Length: 257
Image (tube, rainbow, N blue to C red):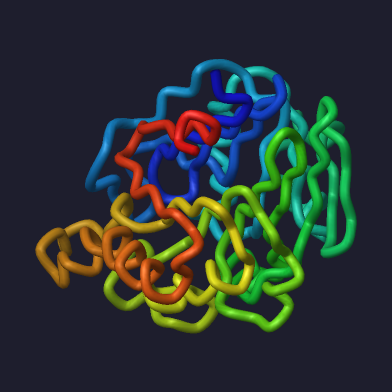
């Protein structure tokens, strides 16, 4: 039986079970988010209450307040340094269970160590918001060492994160005009995998949300990033293995070894 399992629920929502601890990343649990609609996969079905939710940055497709309110239980909310004030305003009931981490900071969740690591991505809530907190990724250390990148472009210090057992790498995104700044396409995602030296990688962030009314616009940018990432990774990071998960599918690391 695996000691570490990861289930991808679309976009950047991942359920991570490691050493008896459960973590949930950037949950989007709804069928719609502002101008975006869930175009693939079933709505996430969480198996229970997580011990902690890891929130990488304030953008609404990662820090989705309605989805956070729908998460069962009263998990810790581990947020970027500077995000606690926004959290307290948006979710007063959660203010007392908010933990801020900046790059280099860490906290313990039931024996799994959660480290905040750098990310190259805009940290504001939005173009008209004064709320800002530098975007982060997370490395978790339990039975396995796992990098959840959040949203990021390439940066030199990626090489300092490895070696890893698993990298959850964001490729593509929620629309044809998302742009390359602060994001990874399939080719850059493969380069990120080469830098972090992960034994396994799972592509995330693509193939889930798309602007309403644009379902047929550049559909390849919605459907193909995961498979393209696997193709590039086979050449760029040949020592790593890639598993392209379907929505709701689980990868058990020991089972896959």
